[in-house]
Image 1 (tube, rainbow, N blue to C red):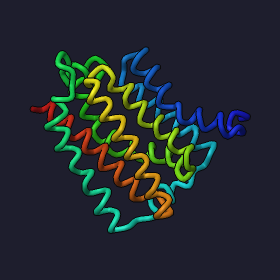
Image 2 (tube, one colour):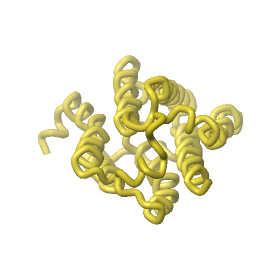
Image 3 (cartoon, one colour):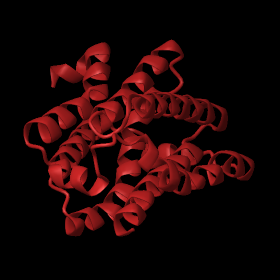
Image 4 (cartoon, rainbow, N blue to C red):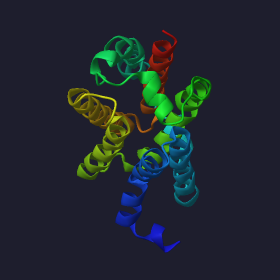
Length: 210
């Protein structure tokens, strides 16, 4: 496909994958599962053509010291969200009602727990790691990485919560970039991403059950 022969077009196309998924899946069809699966389908499509080094992305560059510094603290994200997510949410929005508005009933949401907490970070690391180690260009890509999350949460979080979400994700992406280059592999960024996603979905499950 000639599309994949043009580096900048290919890069922007790859970085825009979640935006298409959010626009079509959430804004048009109002279905979170469709949006997530459309995003993951695009990730797999790009991976088939670009053939990333999955072993390097997920398994190389482990460091016990960096694990303690950058993975274990992310495990606290779940308890943090449990206490502060209700404060950051818009007053007129309930978490259960917001999820139901995008087709996530209680039953389907609990199926999301293993999928979002396990498969999603694997695919996202494969998708976004290709932009690491590119200097200023990495910054633009990770702003796009953080930006699509703001679109997802735009009607549930207060403006201050959205701003915090954006800057935390940009900072996380920059730290992952630094670690990927320093350790010559993405194991620690992947484990950090995994811990973060598990914390997010875990906090949501506990809040819903409460």
